[in-house]
Every structure is written in structure tokens, then in C-alpha cells.
Image (cartoon, rainbow, N blue to C red; front, side, top):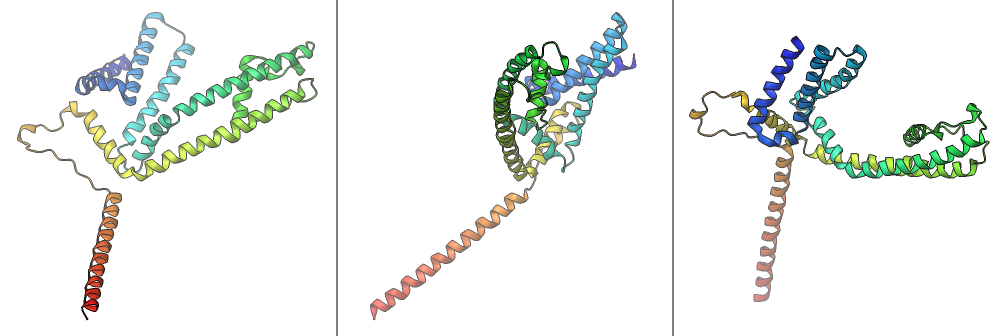
Amino acid sequence: MSTGAINCLNFYIFMRQSLSLGWVVLARMWSIIDLLSIVFNFVLVFSDLVYQIQTKDLRIIEAFLSILMWFKSLYYLSLIGEIAPLVDIIFVIMNDIKYFTIIFAISLMAFINAFYVLGKNQMEDAGGDDNLVPQYSTWLGSAQHVYLSALGEFDTEFYFNSDMTPWLIILFLGMSFFMCIHLLNMLIAIMGESFSHNNEIKESKKRMQQLAFVVDNWWIDPIRNKDKIVFLVAGFSIEVIDDDNEKLNEMIAQISKLGENIKSLETQIKIIQAK
């Protein structure tokens, strides 16, 4: 019962926040996590009270709920200045690699099907001997084999001593080059570029995370006497901008000095011509 009461409180907070932010709440990752947590908790309570489902089945839902709970802690940790850019870069990188993920998934499917087809030939040649049947002779086994190989965990035990050996070696070389060397290094380059760009604006990211937290929880009405406030100002300074302004001022000073030197030179030329 205590779980149901706490979940009702979470649902109340979510509804108040939704009324404050409007439909934009459905586009926010943290709001989606809150909603999923509430739904799963209601399913747990309802299933336990009505259907009396087995504990083993309840633990499956609890496993995913625990992930959501710990992941939600990043929302509050983002209030810490040093952690805020690191939390933000998670979502930035996920957005930057969305098209890469499509290419990676298509490549996985291509090699999974290829190994599965050759594995079928090896299974027929095994003559019923399970010790000679490779893991990739089934589709799920082939998916596991290719995925682990794409991460660098190679298993070539069944590649040799078979009529399929030449074709398996060709397939393995193509997979190891394309999946491990080419695509994974491309992923590292994309993530490195995203991290570098995000690191350049980390000061602004800190302020944005803190202000976003204030907006998310504005429904609490933290300022009681808002009618007496004429202006509500949020100001911050960024060291990068200050450095840029200093460089700009130095350039302006150099240009001004150069202009003075040109004028002095023109004056000297006129004096010489007059003589």
C-alpha cells in the first residue's frame, strides 16, 4: 500500500508539472522517464493486488524500474556544475549518432544473414554431430556471433576444417575491417567531435541545466510575492566570452595603432614632397 501511495504522489507531481509546462513535457526525456516509472509502478501494484502474479514475473518489471530510478538520479546530479556538461553530452551524442546507428544496424543484419547461411551449410555437413555445428547456424546464434565480433571478441573456432573455410575467412576479413576498424573508429570520431564542441560551451550548459530545473519545478511557486517584483533577471558570465572580448579589443588597438602609423607616414611623405 505504501508503494501505491508514493506512486500516487509521483503522479500528482507529474500532472502539476505537465499543466505548468504544457505539451512540451512529452518531448522531454526526464518527463518520459517519470511517466514510465509511474506506469510500471501502477502495473506492479495492480498485478500484485488483483492477479497475484508470481514473484519471478514481478522482478522482471522491477529490474527495468531500477534502471529508470538510477538514471533519473542524473537529473538531480546535473545541478552540480562539474556534472551538468557530462549529463548533457549523453543526450548530445545520442542525437549525433542516430544516423550512424542506422548504418551500423544495417551492417549487422548483412553479416548476420551471411554467417547464418554459411552456418546452415556447416550444420548439414556435420552429419548430426553437435560438436561440429557452429554457433552461427541459428539466427540468434549468428546475431550473437556477429555482434561480439563487431566489438572485437572474435571466435574463429568453427571457421576451419570445413568446406566453407575459404568463404568464412573472406567474410571474417570483411566483417573485421568494416565493422571493427572502419565503423567503430568512425563512431569514436563522431563522439570525440561532439564532446569537444560540448566542452567549449560547458559553462553555458551548466547555467542552462540549472535554469531548466527551475522552469521544470516552477509549479511549486517558489516566489510568493511575485507581484512586488518588477524585474526577474538571471545573469551569468562565461569566461570564453570574456577571452574573446579581450582578443577583440587587442585587435582593435592594433588596427588603431596601424592607422596612426599610416597617417604619420603620409605626413612625412608630404613634407618630403614639399621640399
